[in-house]
Image (cartoon, rainbow, N blue to C red; front, side):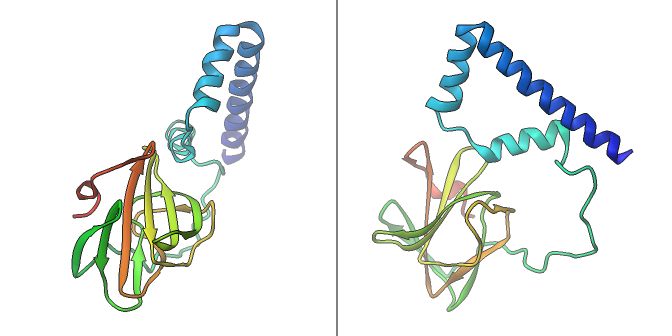
Length: 175
């Protein structure tokens, strides 16, 4: 049964790709719309992942559940909050284990000026969550679930939320 499900998903994916290719070949308008939405605007890979999982299920035809449970599933905890640059600065405990605030794809790990080591996670709504002044413990292009351990912060953690280059209000994401 699982093999049948796998081949069904594979067949549907091939048919969708073929339909898109035929549409591009036959209709100039379709090709322009496709190019505009794929190449000219930011396409959110986590959004596509959510759509795929919703309609086709997980890409593998079987579960990789081997009896393991997550050890780290935390909410963000801090002592004090204040504005800092485009975001906020949180006073956290020494060597604080930082949880991801939202689920998404890790699109950047590196140094940002005035912020230090930074992790950027893109969620399915196109919102970028910037975690700065952090020692990363994840890899670029990992898909991170909400509450997953992403790194350590010494005593300060800087957070910024952006969408399409615009700064968002942190209160929607920090409770």
